Image (tube, rainbow, N blue to C red; front, side, top):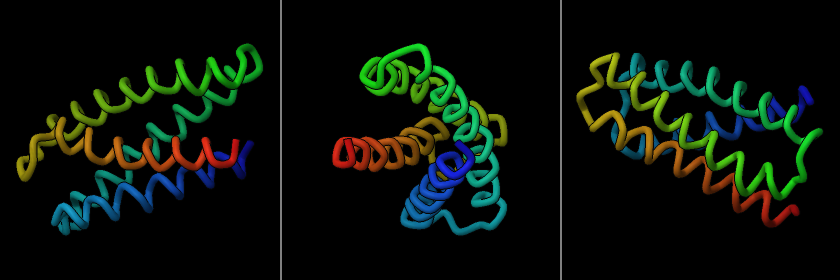
Length: 114
């Protein structure tokens, strides 16, 4: 489990921080905030998914539960950026772009490996 959590977290951080840089977010404080919130939400969502895989089929977890959890993460991160008065881009749009990219890459990866 630990190696999966670490791999997922590192992939998410690389993707979302890279996308943030492409969005011209270069302030170390802003990048640190993205790093921090992703550590919290990624580890949380993956721990939940890991535990649910014992009770539900892969398809239910991956195609039903994970998208619901990703919506929750999008909202949590959007409110987090809003609370920090992030003003360079709409906080929910930023969360949508960052999470959409990392979720999309994860989805493609899972479908290929599956």
